[in-house]
View 1 (tube, rainbow, N blue to C red):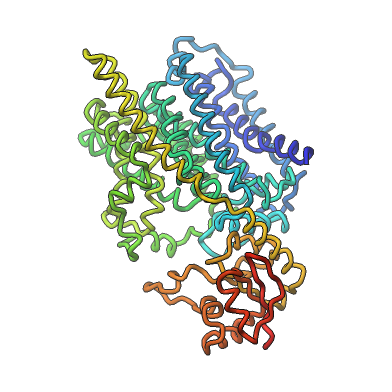
View 2: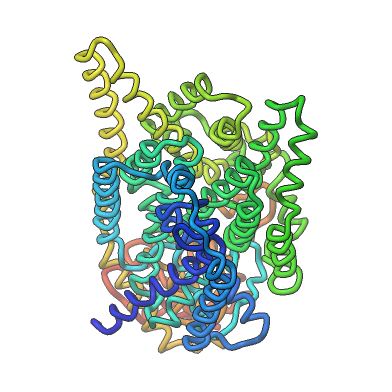
Length: 627
């Protein structure tokens, strides 16, 4: 066990730090080298992991296209070769041409992240609380059991077993959600059915706080705001979606997307505000990484960028043609053009995401077609963003709206991002968004964390300048007390939920029993997703097909007015002795049924067509006697 843990500990920095570090080194150089003043050490540290994730994804996609079998030695060689190539580029660009920059210029470039002693203490304390709260919560949910994570880890195991990337045949999954886990498994041997997925997701979730912090530091040009992000995002609502619950729930795409969206916007902001083609190229690179990872996050980014660009042009209408011409001059430079051509090459000839087709786009846009897509109410918006974060963010919005120069990029970036996500969640029909509103609402925390951090910092300034020190101090204390109690109360509720270790272990034991007993090429198994905890992990014991075994889903899905649904998986469990149930058994060939012992399991015992072959206090498995 110690050896396995050591391998995992060594694998994580090798995969998540090394490629990104050397990529940033090749692009920006080392400290005081030509170009080194463009980016601070703190920014490099925050960007190393997301750049590594994207680089590893592209490496694996290339290896798969070349039909090279994916295994540990191949992946180690690919990552080392990529890092070595980046180092050679660094030496070629900066080794002999390094010239010391004017120190004032370098200090000016980095002072947005030049944290004071107390700011550094505040960041470390916030990080400690953020990690402590998440790990404490995850300690009760570390046994892999969530539905989403089970689905994702099935595809991870497919990659590991086949040594190649799968053909999903459906738009529900994106390859970037699975590559990074498969790489960790192939290098360290850490099983997808262990703690590894939760550890990786926790790491990416924490890095997402850093990426939002560097965006805040650049947009608001204040290290205090960058530091406050760690409290607003890391500590407040640390457990609620899309934070700790998304880690334990295995919502892989959202967690990676929440890390990459701020990165893409960070590069875009710097490209446009500094007229820098290097950042333009990195914006295209990070946006492409998001497109290969999560379709909803990419959709959110596209709408966000469109809102920012249109708002800036509207606020600078008289200079709009000149501005657009300037953007073309930024992006029509060798580096962004090279990145763009590389991305197009990947999309056309290396790997085309399964959702990248007109039908999928048509399904996500247009007038809302379901009740769940008509927008969220105010109470739902509060739940998604968090009451304290929403109130403080609204206050920060008002302060920034009144204080900032409206023709500057930071005005459009800070406010348009919040407005467009709010409209997408509240009134999606106005923007022709046809996606479940609750899923979009989970992204509200990103812009509102930015504005809330700004609002808290500005409030502290106002209170400090107030002539009535006692009144201002009392008001600030009440405000922070509300933010902390509300921000932590929802997280405290999450700890009250009863851990389901026993149920999960019994589910795994029953799956292991069936995997040995069944011949998956002939026997058909039906399980009850509604009442069996962790049942999505059944498929990892068989590794036959994504849709094996069959499942009775949530009952509401069988009454979908927008399209007809099969009902056999419902009827074979709800009414196995009915004419419909019997016809379904004959049609599907189901001859094994796994049920909750305390619910349908009791009723199945009275049916003569079924014999109980496995029993525990939680699960019962029946074999159908009549074929």
